[in-house]
Each structure stands twice: as C-alpha cells, then as structure tokens.
Amino acid sequence: MHIPTLEDIHHAHKIVQKYAHQTPVLRNKSLDKEVAGQVHLKCENFQKVGAFKFRGASNAIFSLSDEEAQKGVATHSSGNHAQAVALAGQMRGIPAYIVMPENAPNVKVEAVKGYGARITFCEATLKAREDTLENVVKETGASFIHPYNDPRIIAGQGTAALELLDQQPDLDIILAPVGGGGLLSGTAIAASPTDIKIIGVEPEEADDAFRSFKTGTLIPLDHTETIADGLRTSLGELTFACIREHVDGIVTVSEQEIKKAMRFVWERTKIIIEASSAVPVAALLNQKIDVTEKKVGVILSGGNVDLDNLPWN
Image (tube, rainbow, N blue to C red; front, side, top):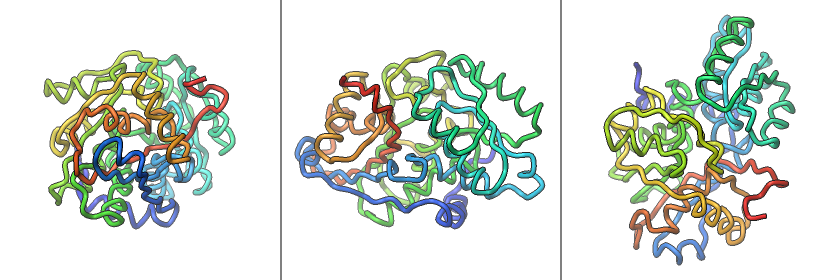
C-alpha cells in the first residue's frame, strides 16, 4: 500500500495545473466575527465540474499510459467524482463509465450525462456500488479510477492545499470535510512539513471516519441519508492509513448545523456551496474547535446544488 508523499503531490500539481483552475481564497468579515478568528476559504466550488474532485481525476486519468487509457475509465460516485472522471475522460478523448447510487442528486446526474459518460444506477450502499462497478469493468475492460482509495487521486486532491499554502502560508489550522478521505488525506500530506493542525469534519449521520480515528480500527459506514451527499461514503484502507499518520483530529456536526452553515455562506459571502462544503464551516460556527485569534484555512469542497431542492425551502 503506497501512502502518497509530498513529492507525489508536487508531481501531481505539474499535471493538474495544465487542466484545472487555480481557485481563489476568499475572506468574509461576518464569518471572521462569528468565530473570532481569520478564516481563509479555498473555493473549490469554482473548480472545473464545480468541485475539488477534478484535481484527483485529472491527475489519475492523465497519468495513464496510452495502452491503459484505450478502453476508457470507470468509477462509482454519488456525483462530484463522477463528473470529474467524465470530464477528464472527455478531455483525454476516452470513454467514461460511471456507477451512481439511485439517490444521487439530479443536478449531478444531469452533469455527468452532459460530459458524455455512460451511467449505470445501483442501490445506495457501498456493496451495491462496488458489485455493479465490478460488472461494468468486466464488460468494458475500463481502468477503475477509485473515488478516493488511490494514491493518484489523493495526490491530486492534495494540490488544493498546496495552492492554499502558497496563497496563505501562515495558517494555524486547516479544516476539510471527510467522506472517503481523499481530500483530507491529500490536505494533510501537503501540509506535513509545517506545524499546521489538520482537522477533518464529518456529518454525525455519517461518522465512520470519526469513529475509525477514535478507535484506531476501520469502521465502515453502511447506509446514510445525510444532506451532505458527497460525504455518504466510508474511508478506504489507504485513506485511513494517511489520516492516522497525518491528521490531528476529526469532529462531527449535526444535519441542522450543516444546513445553517450552508445558508450562512450563501447569505453572507454570496457564493454557492453545497452541503458537503458547509460541514467544516458548521464546525467553526458551532465552536467544535477553538479558533480564537487563529488563522484558519477551510477547503470549500464544491458547489453543485440542486436549486429545486434547497435544504431551507
């Protein structure tokens, strides 16, 4: 099991910067005042496909040899990784086969179709996703691009934190949401030469990373309907190993706290974020960690929202 290194993230950045946006870091006085600290928002909601996931997908897909890429790529995802693989595949000119759970948000399903990928739906459990994907790979011969448990994906996701550290080098803490753990792992490895504390934040309704981190044993998530649909998945063995080695702590937030934080960001910063992005903001607004007079980086993971189904309507 290869745990990615800082060198891997620098190598990924050489690939990723050719295809992805360097996203801005924003400040907001209302947010700073609420938390009594300085908050620096790394806006991956402005990334291609509207989420950080394009970083990992572009690194993985453009790292494939021509022979490996020939039969296309395949993955399972509730949305943002699906879009990322679909677009990166389209940019490389190869087919993309996507397995999506039946409860995936419509806005994400339509986007995946829009990038020309072929979708197969399955039940909303990890076992159903993996079994369905196995059949797709057997039928097509496509290369599997795991949503998070893949060194190339982790290294690609880590480029967001690499940029953040370049844009705002003197941070005390970085917060990132955690679902499968690719973003949190990459973030922690990118910051590993520094003294910056790395904290993962997870919904209470999908708290496998919190429980796994606390017990030191990988505890898979079964089924969840958390509003943070991008976090409805379990850590993998590789991401768990990265997190145990490099992450300082994991905290959880309630569904109500996520909704309030999402609305706060929409209203005060005037940017659109999805519920998964609101998870670390909720941790700040509800004092899950003390950031008084600290400089805090928050990775806003994405902004793909079903506008017909907003949580406060």
